[in-house]
Image (cartoon, rainbow, N blue to C red):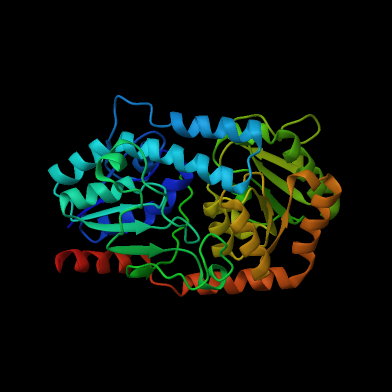
Length: 386
């Protein structure tokens, strides 16, 4: 079977698809990752063959414009989703000709894509492939189709896929505000254990063992511009964690220099450009982050309590509320996030065993799910039966 994967040009929206792609290859299927921007090096570094679906276009430009607008205007949730819909629609329209050609010329049996890229469903339909919507965290409604193709076809709703892959744990999905309660997808959904692929890179020896102080991971995601913009907030969060628990704070900087202010070094503060979270989280007492899907799932899979600071108004709001209501962490608003408030939140999730217990229960729930290889086999059988 031939499995064609695609995603938006974002690291965090590509990594959730990597485990299933790797599993399909291990089963002997052919795999190709066709996309653009940051998706290509992310997939290539994971050992996958990649195809640039829009080699002459700046595929990331719409997302950069969205990020700049979001930082300038601080839009509401509804405004954020509207801006994101426009950005992802433009990205999808740019990638669509290349995706259609790849699916058709390569004779893809299965096309897998995230909810942010509904145009890939059109590519699957054009090639007669099994269309599979691959969630990247909690269930997300598919983004609408927009642009010239939508106008030509008269369609604005995303194509209904033939199947879906779900990563979100059921115990959190019941608190998922992005979908209406009881609103089941109109297609079969295969639950899968998240592979929590966070990229590759060197792992320092200190990351493998817990130190004498509780270790708190502080990360604001995989977008350097966002990390840089949150520099003052990161400093407050780090000071709060250090002061509340006499903690060792590990800050991921993405090369921005944030977290490396004078006096912030040594045993109390470790600033690293990049570190695969899966290698570090098992030694952490807590993780403080921005509410991204991948970071949230990685922490849940490791059974680590979370403090989520909702610095963005997209799915981070739903993620933070789901984690809070499940009892696996707390939510903080950036406007109320002083060093004192951050310290209190970190102290709570570390000192109160209920947060760790809830997180461990979710980790066990995820571990009991079918793995990527099982899901790859089931998708191959579905494609063969068409």
